[in-house]
Length: 131
Image 1: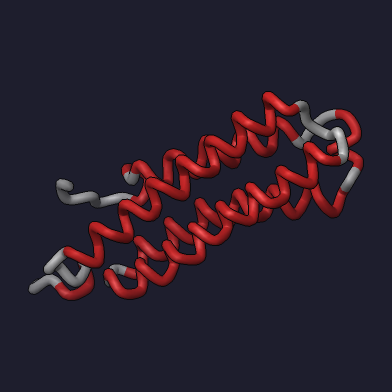
Image 2: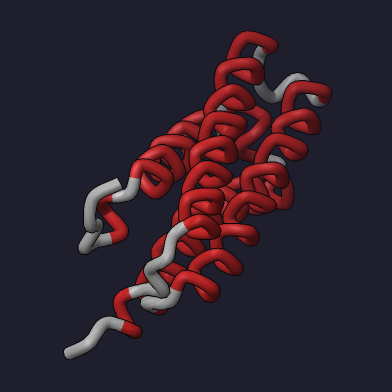
């Protein structure tokens, strides 16, 4: 992996952004849009993935970044769990559920890969670089 200077360049953040965009789209119509609690919670979980990746990256240290990535990965699981509620309530079709869950799983897998990379890396993060 080359040097990444902005969180916007991370594959994990880009995939989380795509997932969040799709969650917002899926929850913006029909009965789903009127279930305010579920709609808002699944949206917050998606936003949490993106936000934790960005915040962890901006902290500048690998240990902190790993902690935030762990929260991001958990939020991806939260999105999947809430999608089960949405499909069970008939808010989304089975094919939409499968597609969105697949996107959430892919996001989680990419975050896990980034976590594994950081654990093996000898670099400690940008805040530890010599000035």
